Length: 167
Image 1: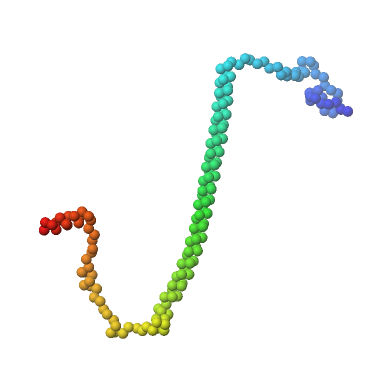
Image 2 (image 1 turned 45 degrees about the vertical axis):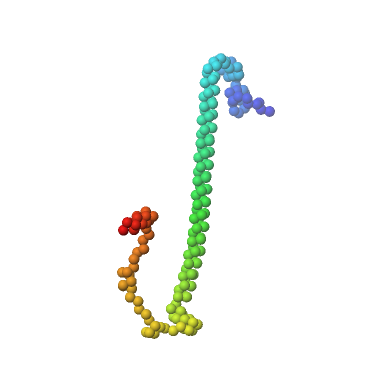
């Protein structure tokens, strides 16, 4: 069974024997005993405050990004609702326009003068007026004699009443 390779520095590839390094070249193991310097209370407080500021700024950034994304989503939902309302109104407009067109066709069919004359003669027993039944009215004199009826205000009524007493 081949030897287990713990560190590549001890072995070569192939069937060669293990390399032995002189003592000074052997890698040293690092110990976990790091020398710790005593940290002053002021430095510790400053480090904690800086850490709190970093945490607070991170939380503020996350909240700001969340608020912006919520605002954008809300605006998109409002735009979507307005677009749906516009589509409904367009559909209603098309329906009303088609109803108006059918009504106009019905009015055009019912206002045929020949059909009205035939109905009046046959159903109602009417006939065209002759010369003795025609009455002409002169409108030129009546237009000049028309007076515009203006309403007077309360103050004008009082003034006219006082003038009427003294005149």
